[in-house]
Image (tube, rainbow, N blue to C red; front, side, top):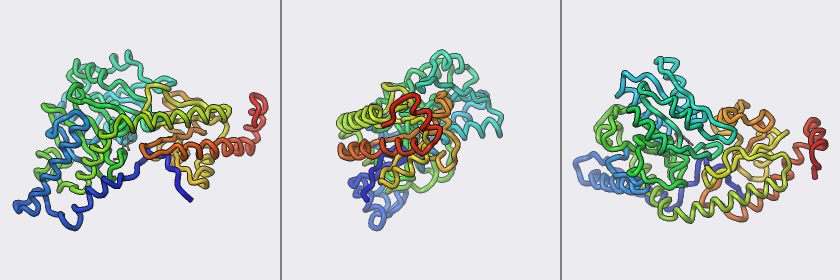
Length: 395
Ligand SMILES: *Cc1c(COP(=O)(O)O)cnc(C)c1O
């Protein structure tokens, strides 16, 4: 059976052109870019080109890119660097809906190192209250870490505006932009963002590579300490194939940016409208406009998300309930809970996330298969059936 992959916020397919760019760096051009001999030394030029391509796609300069092992390491590097370089500031401002890479690090810093974390709340549509943001950032804030776009709902935060508030108080501004890069236009040079995290495998690059953008002049303390790689900002022999792959993936994202975004948005909107029109008691999670073009999170009342996923899996449809990191446990998503999504809807929430490879036919297939799955599951649940016959006609 062919796979209909609508779980691109969890990971994406490597673009075949990315794989081709990486291929020579395993068995042929495997030299160490720090070597004195030209066999290794020439590889440094390929690393430099990848850094240039990535920087360009962000509106940044190559010197501002530090390659890491992924989004998680970039997040840790940013937050720990800000704390290390401002030892007198004891507070962190972040949101309740961050990825576990930020959320769990902040919880640990509070527990083990006595930092005070100011958790920003979100409203029913997943948006921040800017008055709360202003009141939480003070001269005691070491770092403000606010994601650019949420991985579960796709909701976009006004990170550029928040950076300005952070800087008024001398705090460092970090954004986890793992979901935003390649889907939202960026020009970091024109922003006040100090640190930005991104990850290769969320933008059709390989897994195990990412980067931290470090604005020129930002005080910095390395997280991975070792050799002099990455201008002393991250030790360890460079992941050359990964870096080359990430550079190519970023270049390809920018090359077709407007087309990719338009295609994803059109297909996402078709999926959303189709499901809303055919499935009763379905609710959009997140803001309808301030949202990534590829993400659709829907709460189907009176059904279990896991049951929907299992039945979709039988049909070859891949999606996610909450985030991939929390599925497996039946813990409801911290993001949807923070938004105050009612219990009923949280448990039946499904995230569909598209990519530039998603086709019209795939969306048609999902629109054919998913409504009967929900209907079937609701008919099996005595509570669901009674409730549904009271509030609407179940086809
Ligand atoms: C996937 C993801 C990460 C983690 O990136 P890795 O490269 O898998 O470590 C961090 N933040 C967000 C928002 C993500 O979606």
